[in-house]
Image (cartoon, rainbow, N blue to C red):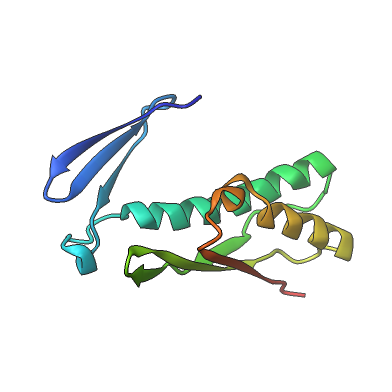
Length: 137
């Protein structure tokens, strides 16, 4: 179990503290929803969670499988699309740019890891979450 404490600071801004580490982050309502857009919005954090979970899970699976390739430098871009009625996340298309030198078996293993990371498995089916994998070789 992990405890996260959040406090509403006013002006549509919250601060959250991660219990185990005491690291903090701020959220702000987006400009298109009466906020300043000065930080991540709560829905931005959903997109960020999916993106970082996919990358992290791939690294964990690579380590467990004994892959001798360094995944450092692998990166991802995600877009958050919002629907208006009701206001919600409608799509999270992501592109992951992989490192060079992965054979077909490693590619399949890592792609499966990303597609089945804990956040991906927690995303509601009404959200279209897709991943495109781009290989430099």
